[in-house]
Image 1 (cartoon, rainbow, N blue to C red):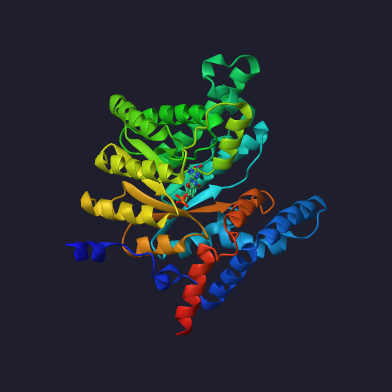
Image 2: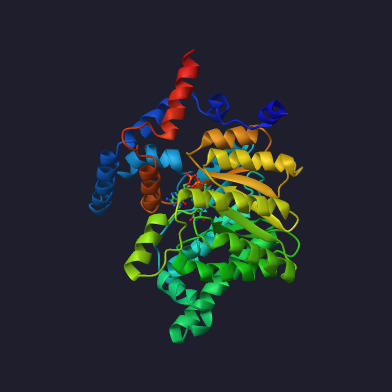
Length: 396
Ligand SMILES: Cc1cc2nc3c(=O)[nH]c(=O)nc-3n(C[C@H](O)[C@H](O)[C@H](O)COP(=O)(O)OP(=O)(O)OC[C@H]3O[C@@H](n4cnc5c(N)ncnc54)[C@H](O)[C@@H]3O)c2cc1C
């Protein structure tokens, strides 16, 4: 019995499948890049250097585009991403076009981000290799307004109330376009001081557009200690409202920031006390969603091998076919290919976030990816370790 169980388990050890999409030259190139960004001092220096270089209009764009941008981004525009979309598609991996321009606050910029997201929805409609669209709420709403709305939209007054109406129109424009095109859209989760407002936006859109299919997906961050309960409450609301709950499940990306702000402002941290507590709630959420799969369609956004393995196993236990579109796995482009490619090879639904945008504008995103891949205490990082393993295998 135990043996059968092990045989059925999906394995992420197969670097041949993981890197089948990379030529010898590509692999060597990724090796050099991850070796370089493995050095924390170099990443810090690089972060400082790129800011100065852009400020002085030095010609650094080409270098960035040929190195770190090439690893983690699809291109500068939707059309630029074509080759990447096709390439991933040929390995049964979907693309989620993620317009990664951040920190824009003027109405003109927020409108143009909305238009861009609608373009990704239109592109997705015409292309089976793009299963979802995505957007960040701070891409369509000023942060000061979102923070105010978090405390209750009814309390907004004067210009704030007027601006909020404009935001709700932007939101509805995106969700309506997604509904009309039949393209599901993820609403990314952000800092807790915005998230109540985002949750209400997502709930309202799900109630409106998820009657027949999961078109709108909210994101739930399991590093928050209140989110397992939130998932259950959202599920009950979906039952009462007669709609399908769409969930992108993640652990959460802003832990340090959350803890710092809570400490500074003297309120209890919304973050779980330990990684184990986050993992426990993440696992419990997966089980809960599988048990309620008729009403909850979800995507597991994770680079955690165990979580991905466990979900695949639980799908078998719940007699859910790997190709069942109600369950998706997702990773970021340029990371955890051993998870994405092995899952896709075994017939599971997999998609990669493919960030794109002008080089200068996606720098904050790229610097976060670089920092994530710096080595801890001289150890070889996971991505680099896998590349070294595959290089050795190919030499045999
Ligand atoms: C496709 C995709 C979409 C994503 N979308 C979003 C999004 O919309 N919003 C968002 O916030 N994040 C998002 N993320 C990022 C995600 O939340 C995680 O930060 C990242 O994936 C790392 O978690 P993991 O499950 O991959 O891996 P792991 O390495 O297993 O987990 C690391 C995570 O565990 C948690 N953690 C670590 N240490 C502790 C501790 N001491 N106490 C409590 N918790 C701890 C943190 O959340 C940390 O990021 C997305 C990730 C992917 C792959």
